[in-house]
Length: 252
Image 1 (cartoon, rainbow, N blue to C red):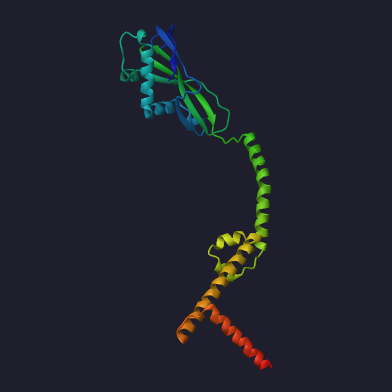
Image 2 (cartoon, helix red, strand yellow; image 1 turned 45 degrees about the vertical axis):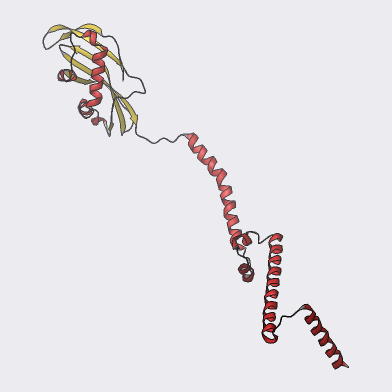
C-alpha cells in the first residue's frame, strides 16, 4: 500500500458559503510497481469518475484497507478515531485532468494521489496510468526464432533424406533363418554385420547335429524293435565290412 505524507495546511475560499475555511492536503505516494484499481477502456468515454466510483463499490475490501491505513498514519491529526463507514459518508471523488493520444483499447490503472479535507468533506483526487493493449514481439525474440529455424532446418532435411534412403533400401530375408532365431529383433539389428552371419552358421550347425542325433535315435529304436537288442559300434563295423566284402565278390 502507499505512504502518506504529513498534511499541508492552507485556507480555501468557499464560493457557495462565501467563507474562508481551513484545508488540509495529504499527498499520497504510490510506487511504480504498486497498482490501484484497474479497468479496461475501449474508448475515452469509458474513463470517467463514475467508472472510478463503480470500481470502489466492486472492490470494497481494497478501499477499506486504503482508508484504514490512511486514518492510522494520520491519527494524530484527528480529534477522535473514525470508522470507514463514517468516512465513506463524507467522501467525494475527483479525477485529475488527463490526456491520452494513443490507440484503444487500453488498461487503465487509477490511484488516489491526494486527499483534501475541507468543510467536513474528504475530497479524494485520482490519477490515471494508461497501458496500451497491444501485442509487441521484441526483435530479439524474432532473431532467436530465425536462428533456431536456420539451425534446425538442415538437420530436419538430413533426417527426411535419411528416411527416404531407408525406405528405398529393401532387404531380402530368409524366412527359415528368422524362424530359427528366437530373437528376431536382435538378428535384424545385426543383419549387416559379419557377426550375424557367423552366429547363424553356428546355429545351423547345431541344428544339423541335433537333427542327425534325432535320426540316429529313430534308427536305433527301429533296430531294437526288430532284432531285440541295441546296435553296438562293433556290430556297425562288422556290418560295414560284410557289405564291403559282398560288394567285392559281386564286382569279381
